[in-house]
Image (cartoon, rainbow, N blue to C red; front, side, top):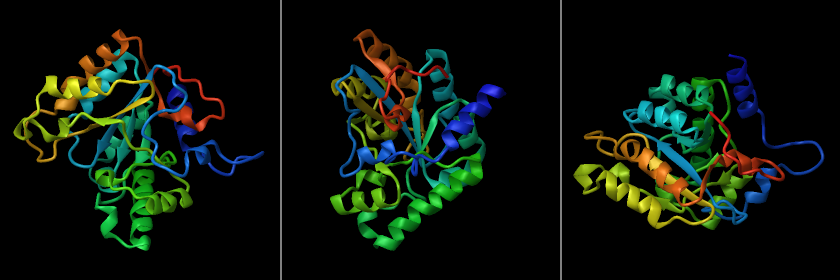
Length: 246
């Protein structure tokens, strides 16, 4: 219980307004972050959660067994519909980022509407988990523009996107398989790769391929000499990209 409380305390601490200078997150402002900087042989695993929670138990089990960290980008609607799932992610020691409230295409919204989407999501995540999200935002559909990234930065968030999406969310109905999902993760393997996966399927039907593919993805990444990095290391002034045990 003490370890879990410590995790909650760290994750709930504000990243901005630190004494002695700008917060480390500000160094990530100005563009979409699609790779971990620095050139180290590390890979970050991320999961978007906007639909159902079907694959979450499997994902959390695999991450625990493999002693690997991940960052989960939740929509506010997901946190409202599945508060126990959101809490399970936090209890397991993983980071939570903001993925908007209702997952709309941001280019179709006004600036105040975009700001409201981010604020409402943060509030919903806080109500569900008792913590604020990390200062990481991921645009729905990857719908970014320089002006919209500047808006997100002004709200205190870095835009964290991805190097590759496994496309596992499309499910078998969309022509994907476990092996195709694994291949997409590995075809893009490079130092600093950020892999985007999903909890659940777009249509809510069939197996959650990202959950099924995760053990193979982790094993293959490590067999090629890479480590699994925690994106929260981006919030330290001199980040250590050693995987934190969970």
